[in-house]
Length: 225
Ligand code: ATP
Image (tube, protein in one colour):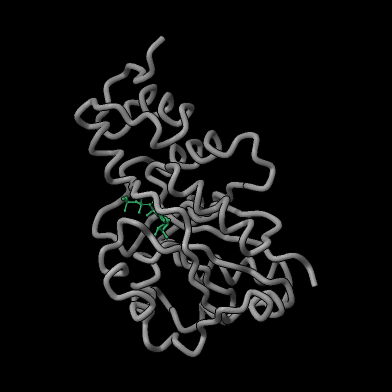
């Protein structure tokens, strides 16, 4: 069987070290050959559009993962007209990689807890496994624990990586990543009031944010010369 492929969806507005650490730890834990970052074009679940344009979010991801051969960025959702449905993207990946290859969709607990609201969500587990990172800043999950997994998916939960990797899709497994309470929201808020965002996201991403005056930031670097 071909090695498992990790697919990591999100808005990445902007990408930060929480995202990069999640991808790094999950790649090792789930023995993924690669992790492909899939920035959403029009995240239909949010009442608002993204703050940075798709092309800018893609570029920030490229800058963030430069030099890491096990990571890649796929901008198909940004290029796609209309809403970004994960089920469509997973369907495309399944067709491209064949019926046997394990596909593992990576996400945090806050995103996974809402899975029953995703478009055609019942079909998602037919296409991929779900690896769910326990998010340090997710108070609801911290209080409920694994009970926060939607009930309909309880039969899909496994604790066995061997079982998961033996199948192309269908399992849910939680993962206790290094807790990093970093969010894109916090970075945007800091940028807006000209506070430093250093050590929350890679320096080339910070430079890009300032060059393009994203998130209301002034056109000056946060870094000392
Ligand atoms: P925002 O603050 O704008 O909502 P975000 O920081 O949650 O953004 P997203 O792009 O929405 O970032 O996240 C993509 C995926 O990464 C989601 O599944 C989310 O749960 C997960 N994620 C984001 N930040 C972290 C983190 N610090 N730890 C664990 N998982 C995270």
